Length: 328
Image 1 (cartoon, helix red, strand yellow):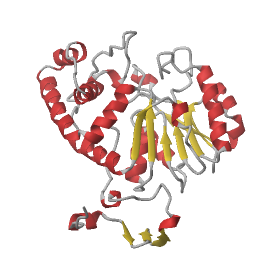
Image 2 (cartoon, helix red, strand yellow):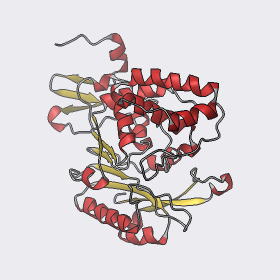
Image 3 (tube, rainbow, N blue to C red):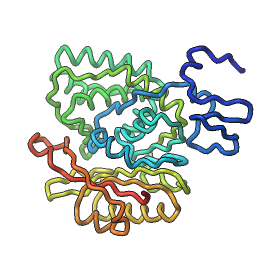
Image 4 (cartoon, rainbow, N blue to C red):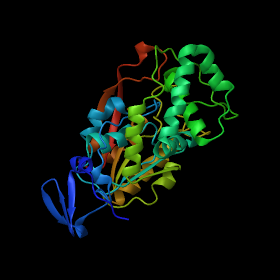
């Protein structure tokens, strides 16, 4: 059933379709010229600004967005992010860049992907549960953290996601770690008044995920990239290669993400290049990584970052990372 577009929708609209013509950014295009990066249905009537990650994640890219922004292709077809994590790059693309595209978002972490789906589909119920966790935590942070971690057993996906987010916001450095039995075992972090329920951002993210045609699924990066085609933009943010024998937080699956995995990923990078995809990869600055991507040495950019996952603040600064692409 058709409906009348409201005044509010008209205010938010920045691209208007007229019969078989699309008007966008001052240019007229026929429908035949549209590609996946352009708007569909009523998505163009929704303001998708002000989205940022709803979880803290080891290796999160929020602090690198200014560097990443300069390397985003000016044009691309679809977007793939197979090491999703906190999704900083995706949220930056869809909010700050204010463009629409078909996105394929995936990660091997089932709890994380469940959380994305719940935020997309059931954000209202999720917010109510998070408000309850916020209230109980504020009464006695230490007692409630360990009760939530060790005693409370969620039943539904909404319950699981509320617990997942509450623990993420209050555990040590937002670290996700489970023991051999698959039980979350990260200790409590040292925070003053942590925000467990960020209602405004959750509602914005829900809107973004619903109106951006985002496909969200549990998958390893190899399967997630099978359908990538020419002019698709792929951002690869794998677990980083260790810069020392003690810098070994590279957990991707139960078997980790070692040198063999890094080698395999570099081969997939080459295959994507052969397919004429636009590929951007971030990793640590080590001789091993430089050697793997030596064929793309002219497109390697060094950046200086802080490593927030280190337990000692003095060791979180002065690190170099690499941004590697196959395009100018």
